[in-house]
Amino acid sequence: MRSPKDFFAPLAVGAPTPVREVPARPSRMIHFFDPSNEKMAAKVPGMVGSVDVLLGNLEDAVRADRKEAARQGLVDIAKATDFGESTQLWTRVNSLDSPWALDDLVTLVTEIGDRLDVVMVPKVQGPEDIHYVDRLLAQLEARAGLTRPILVHAILETARGVADVEAIAGASPRMQGISLGPADLAADRRMKTTRVGGGHPGYLVRADPATDLGEGVDPVTAPRATHQQDLWHYTIARMVDACAMHGIFPYYGPFGDIKDVVACEDQFRNAFLLGCVGTWTLHPVQIDIAKRVFSPSAADVAHARRVREAMGDGTGAVMLDGRMEDDASLKQCLVILELAERLGATDPELAELYAV
Ligand code: 1VU
Ligand code: MG
Image (cartoon, rainbow, N blue to C red; front, side, top):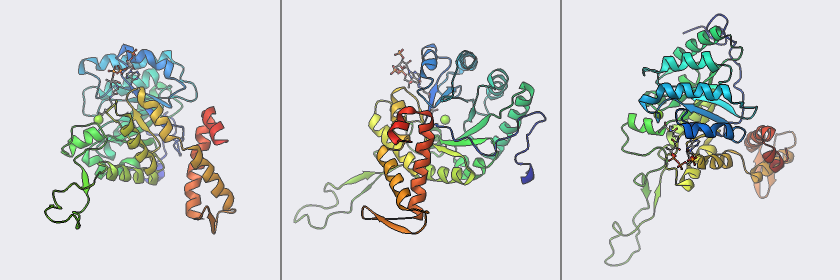
């Protein structure tokens, strides 16, 4: 392990100096596209400005015989597209144990490193995976003469990764954030689900048997209320804590039931309320859902502003609408207001809605 004094030193001579604070750019939706799919790729330039992040995916969901085409497709799109100020370009490279990861990193940094904001690394097992990518990126940045460091995002989709999530979050100043990868994680944990994210009807709690059903009714087999539970609560909460303690950003990942826009919104909102700043969107229909969920409501922003005003210098306790507000509720309100201001800075519609 290097000395903590060297944490922010470049890992290669001539590489850009790592950032001390991860830029808090809006990233409510990380929109996935397959750069080898001509129809999908053709839609990308038209999405600039309406999504926060466009991610050229090279890993799972891209056929093995299309890996080179996807890599080259991303290079072509990045060179031909002006992403402007409000849309970032990210990529998800193949996993580090695959035959493609090295060429993905070498080609992308060399060819379009000046346009890439973040490299998403799948199936991260521990901090050593981040250290490997960190050093390699520094060497490639130095060779390409880049002046801005490329950031790294890890997907939490192995049991070992979850067990080591704090070390992953703090492995490098390049760490931008972490996403939940529920499908691979379920397989790695040997969970008995077959879905891509979301809930499961079998994962539930049931009300106790009634005691007053009368003669001849079996309270055990009589109908009882059940409530589906969130399979991902534990992992998202751990991820959020690990990210918060290291000053990086947590994200929900994929929701595979594209047609179930209602459950998708619920899953996204659970993640938002727990502290996530965004999610993946796999299909255009999920983009507006993510935008709606990961932007605070006008009512929440207005309430937060009222609390800030009522709290004066920020100490003590006041009553507002029958509720006690104090230093701690003010801090929550400041989180909402800071997010509203950040989103309003790049989205004129939200700026008007929030009056920021
Ligand atoms: O109307 P058109 O025919 O011109 O266009 C289609 C389609 O091409 C387009 N479209 C997209 N455009 C941009 N980005 C996208 N992600 C995207 N998806 C589709 O929209 C029009 C309507 O499409 P559709 O409703 O007919 O949908 P398809 O059957 O064409 O495609 C559905 C899937 C889910 C296959 C497609 O959206 C997709 O491949 N999405 C990305 C999947 C992905 O990236 N998976 C990896 C991340 S998840 C993971 O790793 C863990 C499991
Ligand atoms: Mg995966």
